Length: 221
Image: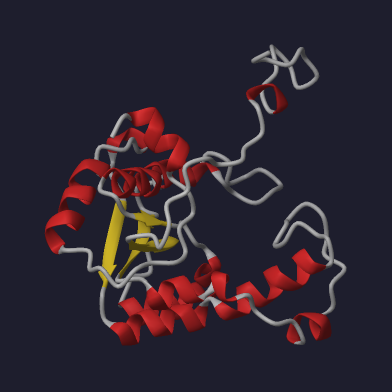
Protein backbone atom coordinates (compact mmCIF):
# COMPACT_ATOMS: atom_id res chain seq x y z
CA UNK A 1 0.00 0.00 0.00
CA UNK A 2 1.24 3.50 -0.82
CA UNK A 3 2.44 5.25 2.36
CA UNK A 4 0.22 8.33 2.19
CA UNK A 5 -2.84 6.18 1.51
CA UNK A 6 -2.03 4.11 4.58
CA UNK A 7 -1.61 7.25 6.70
CA UNK A 8 -4.94 8.66 5.50
CA UNK A 9 -6.94 5.47 6.06
CA UNK A 10 -5.44 3.96 9.24
CA UNK A 11 -8.46 4.69 11.41
CA UNK A 12 -9.12 3.59 15.00
CA UNK A 13 -10.62 0.16 14.38
CA UNK A 14 -12.62 -1.17 17.34
CA UNK A 15 -14.77 -3.88 15.73
CA UNK A 16 -13.19 -6.96 14.19
CA UNK A 17 -14.24 -10.01 12.21
CA UNK A 18 -13.48 -13.48 13.60
CA UNK A 19 -10.60 -13.85 11.11
CA UNK A 20 -7.37 -14.79 12.90
CA UNK A 21 -4.16 -12.78 12.81
CA UNK A 22 -1.51 -15.38 12.16
CA UNK A 23 1.92 -15.40 13.77
CA UNK A 24 3.39 -15.02 10.27
CA UNK A 25 1.49 -11.78 9.62
CA UNK A 26 2.13 -10.47 13.10
CA UNK A 27 5.84 -11.19 12.79
CA UNK A 28 5.92 -9.28 9.51
CA UNK A 29 4.15 -6.33 11.16
CA UNK A 30 6.59 -6.21 14.07
CA UNK A 31 9.60 -6.86 11.82
CA UNK A 32 8.82 -3.68 9.89
CA UNK A 33 7.55 -1.62 12.83
CA UNK A 34 10.83 -2.13 14.72
CA UNK A 35 12.54 0.43 12.48
CA UNK A 36 10.73 3.21 14.35
CA UNK A 37 13.10 5.77 15.90
CA UNK A 38 13.87 5.85 19.61
CA UNK A 39 16.04 8.10 21.76
CA UNK A 40 19.70 7.32 21.18
CA UNK A 41 18.55 4.27 19.19
CA UNK A 42 18.35 2.49 22.56
CA UNK A 43 15.26 0.59 21.41
CA UNK A 44 13.61 0.26 24.79
CA UNK A 45 10.30 -0.89 23.37
CA UNK A 46 8.86 -4.29 24.24
CA UNK A 47 5.67 -5.93 23.00
CA UNK A 48 3.62 -8.56 24.81
CA UNK A 49 1.53 -10.55 22.31
CA UNK A 50 -1.70 -11.58 24.03
CA UNK A 51 -3.94 -14.27 22.55
CA UNK A 52 -5.31 -16.03 25.65
CA UNK A 53 -8.92 -15.02 26.19
CA UNK A 54 -8.59 -14.92 29.98
CA UNK A 55 -5.79 -12.35 29.70
CA UNK A 56 -7.74 -10.25 27.20
CA UNK A 57 -10.75 -10.37 29.52
CA UNK A 58 -8.60 -9.20 32.42
CA UNK A 59 -7.14 -6.32 30.42
CA UNK A 60 -10.63 -5.28 29.38
CA UNK A 61 -11.77 -5.25 33.01
CA UNK A 62 -8.73 -3.19 34.03
CA UNK A 63 -9.77 -0.58 31.46
CA UNK A 64 -13.15 -0.03 33.08
CA UNK A 65 -12.28 2.45 35.89
CA UNK A 66 -10.52 4.86 33.54
CA UNK A 67 -13.17 4.39 30.87
CA UNK A 68 -15.95 5.22 33.32
CA UNK A 69 -14.27 8.48 34.30
CA UNK A 70 -13.57 9.21 30.64
CA UNK A 71 -17.23 8.74 29.75
CA UNK A 72 -18.48 10.84 32.68
CA UNK A 73 -16.20 13.75 31.88
CA UNK A 74 -17.05 13.59 28.18
CA UNK A 75 -20.76 13.69 29.01
CA UNK A 76 -20.10 16.79 31.13
CA UNK A 77 -18.41 18.53 28.21
CA UNK A 78 -14.92 18.22 29.67
CA UNK A 79 -11.72 17.03 28.03
CA UNK A 80 -11.34 13.77 29.98
CA UNK A 81 -8.33 12.97 32.12
CA UNK A 82 -6.92 16.43 31.48
CA UNK A 83 -4.05 17.58 33.72
CA UNK A 84 -4.37 21.28 32.92
CA UNK A 85 -8.06 22.00 33.59
CA UNK A 86 -9.41 20.51 36.86
CA UNK A 87 -12.47 18.28 36.51
CA UNK A 88 -15.77 19.32 38.07
CA UNK A 89 -17.29 15.85 37.79
CA UNK A 90 -17.95 14.19 41.15
CA UNK A 91 -17.03 10.67 42.14
CA UNK A 92 -20.75 9.93 42.51
CA UNK A 93 -21.41 10.99 38.92
CA UNK A 94 -18.54 8.87 37.67
CA UNK A 95 -19.80 5.83 39.57
CA UNK A 96 -23.27 6.24 38.02
CA UNK A 97 -22.00 6.57 34.44
CA UNK A 98 -22.44 3.73 31.97
CA UNK A 99 -19.27 2.67 30.18
CA UNK A 100 -19.47 2.76 26.36
CA UNK A 101 -18.49 -0.70 25.05
CA UNK A 102 -16.07 0.86 22.58
CA UNK A 103 -13.76 1.87 25.42
CA UNK A 104 -13.25 -1.64 26.81
CA UNK A 105 -14.69 -4.36 24.58
CA UNK A 106 -12.25 -4.16 21.62
CA UNK A 107 -9.53 -5.53 23.90
CA UNK A 108 -11.78 -8.44 24.86
CA UNK A 109 -12.95 -9.25 21.34
CA UNK A 110 -9.90 -8.72 19.12
CA UNK A 111 -8.10 -11.86 17.91
CA UNK A 112 -4.82 -10.52 19.27
CA UNK A 113 -3.87 -7.72 21.66
CA UNK A 114 -0.44 -6.10 21.75
CA UNK A 115 0.69 -4.52 25.01
CA UNK A 116 3.39 -2.02 24.14
CA UNK A 117 5.84 -1.17 26.93
CA UNK A 118 9.05 0.81 27.30
CA UNK A 119 12.13 0.27 29.44
CA UNK A 120 12.39 3.32 31.70
CA UNK A 121 16.07 2.63 32.28
CA UNK A 122 16.93 3.75 28.75
CA UNK A 123 14.54 6.63 27.95
CA UNK A 124 15.51 10.30 28.20
CA UNK A 125 12.83 12.07 30.24
CA UNK A 126 13.98 15.54 29.24
CA UNK A 127 10.94 17.22 30.79
CA UNK A 128 11.11 15.44 34.16
CA UNK A 129 11.74 18.67 36.11
CA UNK A 130 9.06 20.77 34.42
CA UNK A 131 5.91 21.60 36.42
CA UNK A 132 3.61 19.57 34.20
CA UNK A 133 2.92 15.96 33.29
CA UNK A 134 5.84 14.36 31.48
CA UNK A 135 5.45 13.51 27.80
CA UNK A 136 8.97 13.55 26.32
CA UNK A 137 9.63 9.89 27.10
CA UNK A 138 6.83 8.97 24.72
CA UNK A 139 9.10 9.94 21.83
CA UNK A 140 10.98 6.68 22.42
CA UNK A 141 7.94 4.39 22.23
CA UNK A 142 4.92 5.86 20.42
CA UNK A 143 6.63 5.87 17.00
CA UNK A 144 6.85 2.08 17.40
CA UNK A 145 3.17 1.88 18.34
CA UNK A 146 2.14 3.95 15.33
CA UNK A 147 4.39 1.94 13.01
CA UNK A 148 2.57 -1.18 14.19
CA UNK A 149 -0.78 0.36 13.21
CA UNK A 150 0.53 1.49 9.82
CA UNK A 151 1.99 -1.96 9.17
CA UNK A 152 -1.31 -3.55 10.22
CA UNK A 153 -3.12 -1.30 7.73
CA UNK A 154 -0.71 -2.43 5.03
CA UNK A 155 -1.68 -6.03 5.83
CA UNK A 156 -5.40 -5.28 5.50
CA UNK A 157 -5.80 -5.22 9.27
CA UNK A 158 -6.63 -2.49 11.75
CA UNK A 159 -6.37 -1.62 15.39
CA UNK A 160 -6.50 1.14 17.92
CA UNK A 161 -4.03 2.57 20.42
CA UNK A 162 -5.85 2.44 23.76
CA UNK A 163 -4.55 3.70 27.09
CA UNK A 164 -7.43 3.05 29.50
CA UNK A 165 -5.77 0.10 31.30
CA UNK A 166 -2.71 2.24 32.10
CA UNK A 167 -4.60 3.89 34.98
CA UNK A 168 -4.35 0.45 36.61
CA UNK A 169 -0.74 -0.08 35.56
CA UNK A 170 0.32 -1.92 38.72
CA UNK A 171 -2.34 -4.55 38.10
CA UNK A 172 -1.48 -4.76 34.39
CA UNK A 173 2.17 -5.31 35.27
CA UNK A 174 1.25 -8.04 37.76
CA UNK A 175 -0.99 -9.70 35.16
CA UNK A 176 1.75 -9.76 32.53
CA UNK A 177 4.70 -10.31 34.92
CA UNK A 178 6.35 -7.05 33.87
CA UNK A 179 9.41 -5.92 35.85
CA UNK A 180 9.35 -2.63 37.78
CA UNK A 181 11.42 -0.75 35.21
CA UNK A 182 8.92 -1.33 32.38
CA UNK A 183 6.13 1.19 31.77
CA UNK A 184 2.91 0.26 29.97
CA UNK A 185 2.37 2.67 27.07
CA UNK A 186 -0.47 1.22 25.00
CA UNK A 187 -2.85 -1.72 24.80
CA UNK A 188 -3.61 -2.32 21.13
CA UNK A 189 -6.29 -4.71 19.86
CA UNK A 190 -5.47 -5.85 16.32
CA UNK A 191 -7.64 -7.66 13.77
CA UNK A 192 -9.49 -7.43 10.49
CA UNK A 193 -11.93 -4.50 10.73
CA UNK A 194 -15.61 -5.18 10.18
CA UNK A 195 -15.51 -2.22 7.79
CA UNK A 196 -12.69 -0.12 6.40
CA UNK A 197 -13.09 3.65 6.45
CA UNK A 198 -11.72 5.38 3.39
CA UNK A 199 -12.08 9.02 4.42
CA UNK A 200 -11.10 10.30 7.86
CA UNK A 201 -12.10 13.65 9.32
CA UNK A 202 -9.19 15.83 10.38
CA UNK A 203 -8.55 19.55 10.71
CA UNK A 204 -6.77 21.22 7.78
CA UNK A 205 -3.06 21.98 8.08
CA UNK A 206 -3.77 25.70 8.47
CA UNK A 207 -5.74 24.98 11.66
CA UNK A 208 -2.76 23.58 13.56
CA UNK A 209 0.40 24.90 11.87
CA UNK A 210 1.71 28.49 12.05
CA UNK A 211 4.74 30.33 10.76
CA UNK A 212 7.50 31.25 13.21
CA UNK A 213 5.32 31.74 16.35
CA UNK A 214 2.14 30.51 18.06
CA UNK A 215 0.37 33.64 16.88
CA UNK A 216 2.04 33.68 13.50
CA UNK A 217 0.44 33.40 10.11
CA UNK A 218 -1.37 30.14 9.47
CA UNK A 219 0.76 27.71 7.49
CA UNK A 220 -0.70 25.58 4.75
CA UNK A 221 -3.09 27.93 3.03
